[in-house]
Image (cartoon, rainbow over all chains, first blue to last red; front, side):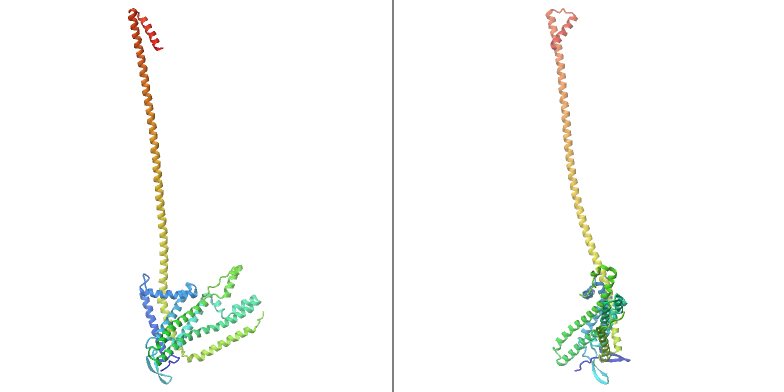
Length: 287
Length: 192
């Protein structure tokens, strides 16, 4: 029995570039998605949709409804859908591909760090921190871009580095200075939490899938028949859950950062409405 | 204005700094052990980017466009159907109204013609009656005149007869002037 190591094993090298087993799985998944997308593109008709198109549309509408539940705004949902749905589908397919017979069980003998070892040729793509980290970083960076575009560059970064808030606090004087400084400190903590987002997103997915792979390998090596089945069922569920967790969190980050900051809106309304201070509408919040 | 430095701000800032440092340090030492390799990282990033790109370009954008177009089409169809229904109801109502109006008109014309016919009939009747009365009157007048004439001629005849009788009785010796005087007298007698 060989328990999979935490890092994906390079099966062979292209020059100095290591081709790992997780990378192979990711490529297969990417290939599937390219084929699927090309097939959809070819079959697409604006007339009466065929069954295949109806199914894809149904899936898309379902995902869009899901996204609507968080954003509460159809226009916003449509903007976020490509990233969120791609994440969900790609993670889901990658996770489930890890359960196909052969993944984790077809071996190649490799030379790893000086000692000979049997390494599986296929390993779930998300059991490699590189992929999960890449998606998490991309997601968080995209959410910041979305924030900068929707609420403005300064309003967005003022949430984290609250120089504007401090400046306004000093201009107003009194207790406002203290409030502004506390807000600035909170902003700094927010900045840390942005890093934590990347860490938690990537490690959660990686940990779950990697643990699943280890679990099934162990079960399989203990009793080859029947016993691993409940765990594989569990892994099916984990695959969906982790895919939806990753995409839902992405969606929440996108939604939060695309909303106007509270103080900004308050002042905006004070300037515009004056006496209607108590009636300012709340920004659409996640329900 | 001076910055009031409060302990909680310093604390928060220190905590934030420590957290950043810890995270950075943890990542430095842990990342390599977890198998993070910048080459693989870029390859995997490219993988997901390809998925995102093809799905975006070939699936989401065209499908959403088609769905939106279809939704708009269906909405328009529903609106049209509603409008058509409203138009149909309006037309039906108008037709019904027209029928009712036509019936009322027909009724009115019928009544009027009946009234006219009635008037015509009574007028004709009155005219006929008047003509009849005139005819009767004329007849009566003619009769009266006839009678008068007969009486006159009878008187004349009787007077002549009387004169003749008197002449016979007196012996036909009267002169022409006496005869005439007697005749006149007799006529005068008969008249009174």
